[in-house]
Image (cartoon, rainbow, N blue to C red; front, side):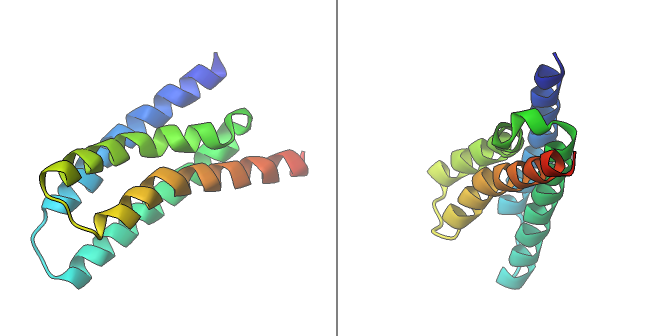
Length: 114
């Protein structure tokens, strides 16, 4: 039951971040430096939430991070189909991989500590 709640919380948070940050960041007009700063902040948010979710639900390891990044990656993939940009591929991979990686590492650190 606790793991199910963790997955649902991760999907909801991922959906909120995916829609209000990832999806809107690709629509934003601005210079490349401004866009890169926005993408960096979004990736940092995913890393922090991945670390927190790894500490709260250590049994789920990388799954909770994947569920956190999946909604944003799906929205970015949807946008990439309409307007492809080669720079969105590393953004897509970072959103999909990094939250799972950091949640796995923090869950391992929590298990070693206890």
